[in-house]
Image (cartoon, rainbow, N blue to C red; front, side):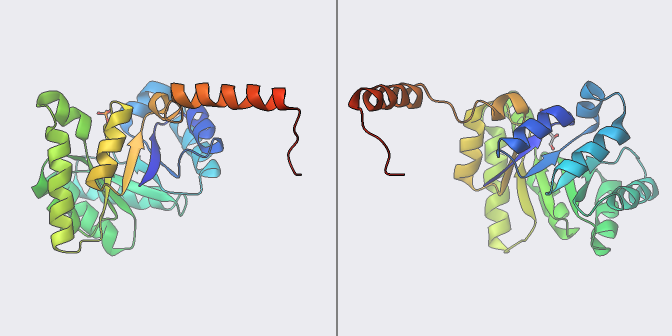
Length: 219
Ligand code: E4P
């Protein structure tokens, strides 16, 4: 399972990328509003840095507007993925953009039917929002992910499942066990993923023993 960062902050994205933690980025209008003063400039920075999928969301509410924004965004860079919400105009726009070989990520997916519509629109990614569903009813986000995984494998659907709305490190493990293709993760969770107290304790002991041994590496 690949990991993306769920952020619009170029500094967070650069740190995560340099640490080798991520292979793509998902942004959304709320994340942009939180971290950006100049969104076009930040997107330019992000696209210069990341050589992998970068989802940028449309903000139009009509079919024509979504197609126009999506087409313009896709021209910024070959790594741009146009993020479109799971609403009826969105499915139409996604189908149109996908038919022109523009990569689309259908976002705000909360039902299997929305995921099936996304697949029928021929999009590259669908993003079920696990955390927001889990907050309403325990594990219902994971149940949705299981259903999408099962239905997509029944029909050998090529749309990739991008698990989103991650709240804690354990959600990533659950998404991987269910079979999400990608998980998009906030920065604060990403940077904690490598740590475990027993790894630290074990390494401290290895290094103490090594120093006391007087040995050297065969290099
Ligand atoms: C996905 O692409 C979204 O940006 C996302 O994960 C939003 O989740 P949240 O707002 O529920 O954290």
